[in-house]
Image 1 (tube, rainbow, N blue to C red):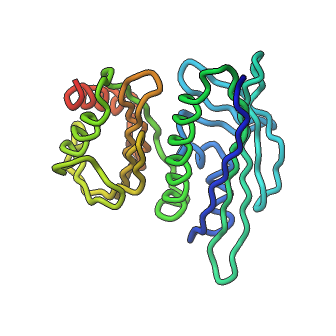
Image 2: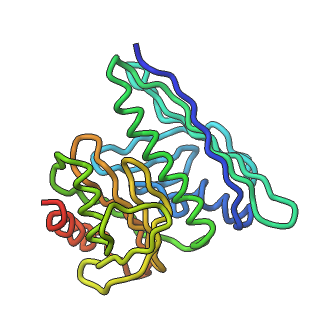
Length: 245
């Protein structure tokens, strides 16, 4: 049967139109809030997810106004497209709208759609946090995989305890992150839903995501200029093992 979808997210941000454009239409900008590693060149957006690096043709490019691209259609009709619209606001700042649309094939699309929706909401909030707090800064993205999780309610409680709370994390909570191999830093949970927790500190986004196939994922952005993705990824994988193993 499959499922055709379209979802929109809107926000007014403090950043300038140019700062938002850099965040949505350049590789370093996208790296600072999305996932994987992205390049934007020669009419395509190429995002490397590790073992998969699709090239998505740019469908519209109006600098300072609109940017869109669409991942190649799969043989089963699967696709996803992104459309970003930005406009300067009177008195300063920018209005931002992101529309994700696509098609998920098969009769078992619902679980995938839920994971995509929860993750998409986190990425949008990360984009908003980035342009409001880190605009113009580059980030080192990393993804680390924890052990399989059987009881997600308990897993979120464990994460809350690891962040200095006596319960699961709620949006707006002030938390403390014990960074592997480093110090403990203060942060705020800027986005929480049933499948994601995202924390902002002075130099990072620490994001924890319910993996579609079972593990807890760390999907972080490190804004420190000397960040090493390989070493940090290894450290965070060990951290996830200690907390959720």
